[in-house]
Length: 255
Image 1 (spheres, helix red, strand yellow):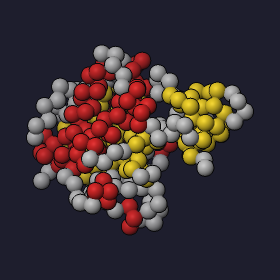
Image 2 (cartoon, rainbow, N blue to C red; image 1 turned 45 degrees about the vertical axis):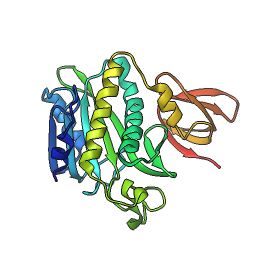
Image 3 (cartoon, rainbow, N blue to C red; image 1 turned 90 degrees about the horizontal axis):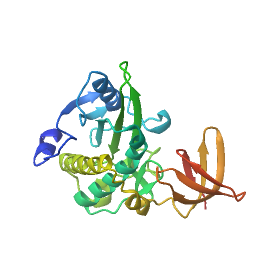
């Protein structure tokens, strides 16, 4: 069954998913959602693609976009001070949605990876866009490995997994999409009212308490990931004893 038609069954959201644009094949849902924003599309517009030919993650890295997986981007217009917290909301909603649909207990690798048994199962990307009118908005991108088998791809076999691989059975993408949109709608409305699920997000972070290597803006730091602050930035106790706060970065775990 069409993934969108299945997702619309019982969706009942306030903002997110009231309009869904579906492509069988597209370059990037992020690019299409940004175009939708520039054209004045309503907040909560969702762009879904069965396949992407130019899917991307953070730092312009390629995101492998297979037809067995789920790829979507959502147009949001948060207040400027709330925009950095979209990543917090996205992490929480994905852990919740995966748990509700599969029973699996996912964890988060700061700042944007969703992991199962140490392997990446989903990724998050948030990009700020400014239209010619001066209006700013955020495009939230989500990619989930649903029914693919990363073990078939040598470059991914040791670092990625999928929901079907972990559960041992194929999953209905429409049901997962519906739950993702419901959770995003609920958490985003809460964010607009000043309710930030920071404690829940912190509890899901596999990164905290671990020694890490963080690369950010050309600098590399080693230290203990102590905490995250109220804006979702990583608080790192560097090996030299200094305490630094990093809003983003590339994290690798150290043994």
